[in-house]
Structure formats: structure tokens, C-alpha cells
Image (tube, rainbow, N blue to C red; front, side):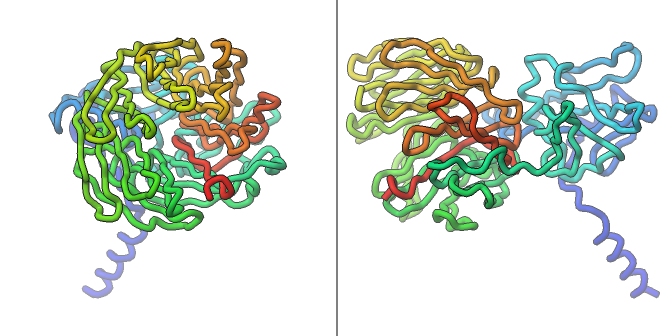
Length: 487
């Protein structure tokens, strides 16, 4: 009898799905105070008066922000934003809490489908952050549940149908709207912080999209041209991954101190040094890849975000958006030698050393700054789209391409005339271009999508999107390896 009971218990527990996301006790208490009759389910959803509320989780990097400000300081969770029902009497349609968790009410349609509120109901202030949240992977999906196409980024790994505009099939598996265009080539690597994936594919053949699954938050990518190795930072796990080109596994991982938060990375020409920007530790670090240890660290202002090595000038330029500062380090002893104030929160940085210029994308100011390195002064300021977050420069220095997150567009600046000449609006399938990369022949621009699974590839001669490619995950950073030019 005992053996039979033990067997039945074993079968029961093996058949129950594993629920890995734990509801914070103080969040549960906060909800209970607002809705005393709330009944919580095993997947962290809850029911009040026969109305179901589903949880949405913030991206992993959101959890790092309060830690950076107050080392594990206990903060009381409270409701910061809500959307009331249309009649003002029923239960709210959305509840947003200070720890980043969101609860959305399940709405019933007359056709027996169920859904949530529309994106247009959410204020502009919160809409972008909403699209970065995800349903937990262990959510028990309600029967006949659908979400609208422009909210599809919150689905994550769940099997949830999308409600499409008329005459569109949003649930079809899309590899691309076109076959790979003639002349498009290179190996494209992408990071997906939301899913923990590192994705790569051959741009001359869209039929095979490869994934390397991590348990963290892969962020930025650098390439060691000498040894043909890729290095990927992991924000949440405080690690650097080393990968061999076109292989489906991580070759090696380097563990950094807790709360380093490695945000940006570059590799020395011989592959022996990794230059790492640690945005929570506020350090610029030089790491010896063979010995697997630090060589030197330099303390920086809070929240450094991006950097660029100016090798010929023995300088390193670093953006610090919280201080509106562009910092310069001496590349020999890594001491701070200069800084320049740049309004608007400079984040992304790119250099044109042939002309002695630096460009910063100023996310809050909706501008791009052109800085003259030798003259040590700002040369020009370009007004672009809303929330500029990514930059690419034509090898000849003629054109600057700017990815605008909120306006979901690419601005093209003629650097000779200093004028904004074109704006390319991105399709609805691609949202928030957090990174853009030029192909080796400068004819194509690859655009990542922070909140949807579809990247876009722009034909720069025609100045329009030529390819929309579903890579199966939201994407943050991109790196293009051209086999010929990287030899």
C-alpha cells in the first residue's frame, strides 16, 4: 500500500507543471489590501468577483535599477498607475505596481473570445514599458484568449493567438516577406534579453535561424577578428560569453563580480583584452581574456552607458547620460583626462576617426551631437526623431543613420550639409530599433526590434524596407560578420 501511494504521489508531482516565478509577498499584500476577496492561483493570476487578472513581468534589467540606487534596500510596493473600466464602476482594466509587475483584467467578447485592454488605452508615458513586459512562461492561458497584433511582444513563449487587422494572417509563421535579396550577405548575430537567446543566421539564406539559449540577459556583442570569436555581455548574470563563429553552443563564460552589470564591450585587435563598461559598478574595466582576470579598473560617474575606443588617439570616449557627460580616458593609464557636457542624455556613441568626429545619440533630447575631438568642442547638433537609441555611419562619412525608438523610424543625416534629408518609417512588425548595422557594402541597413519578433532590412538605395524577418524573439543588439572583410 505504501509503495502504491508513493508511486501515485510521484506521478502527481511529475504531471504538475513547474511554476518558477514567485509572487513577491509584499505585492500580494498590496493587492489584498485593494481587493480583500482576491483569490490567487498557482500561476500568480488572481480572481475577484469572477473577474480574472493576469500577471505581466518586467524585463530582467528593470530589477537591477532599484539595486543600483540602494543596495538591496527594501522598498514598499504600491500602485503607481491604473486604468479604470469605461463605466468607472467595474474593476480596473490594468494595475501597475512600483516593482514593475502589471496585472491586466481578462475581458470577454461577445464572440466568446477573451482578451485584454488595447495599447491605445495606455498613456504614452507607460506604453513603451508595457511592450517590454511578458506573460510568465508558466501562465495558464484562458480559453479562447487572444491579443492584438501590436501587443504581441508580451506573449513571450506562450501559445497565444494574435488578433489581426483585416486581410492579414498574423498567426502564420513568417520567415520573411521576401527571399533573401541578391547581394545581401554576412552572418548576423542578435541578442534577445527578453528570452535569453543569442540568435544567428546567414543573410544570404533565411531558411535557417539558429538559437543559443542562455539563462540570463544577453545584451551587447563584440567580435575578435584575429581569433574569429564573439563575446556577448550578460546584464543579469554578470558574465561574458565567448562563442565560436557559426557554432550552436557557448565555448566559455567569464564570471564578473556581482552587480557589475556589463553593458558595453569591445575587444582588442589581438583578442587578448576585453574592454568592459560595468554600468552598475560604474567602472571601466580591462579584462585579460587568456588569464581570465582583470588588468585594471577606472571609476566613472553613475550609469555609464556606451563607449568607443579611439585607438589612434590613445583615448576612450564614454557616455554618462545621467550626468549629461561625455568622458575621455587616457588609453595608456585609463585615467580621466577630459569631459564635455552634452544635453539630452547621451547614450549610444559612434566615431568617425578619419574626420576626427564623435556622434552621440541623446535619448531624452531627441538629438544627435557631433563632437570635434581635436578642437574639443561640439561642432553640430542634429534634431532627429523621438528617442534616438542607435547609430550607424557610412564608411565614407557622408551619411549618418539614426534609429528612433519612440517614433519608430530611421533618420538619415547628410553630414556634409548638416541636414536631415530623409526619414524612413519602420513597419508595424518592427518596433523600437535599439540597434542598426550597415552591411559591408553599405547597401543595406539591418534594424533590430526591441518589442517584436521581426527585424527589418532596409534597401538604402531605395530608402525603404525590403525584408521583414521573423527571428522568433525580440532583439536588442546586432553584429554583422562579413566573412570576406573580416579575414
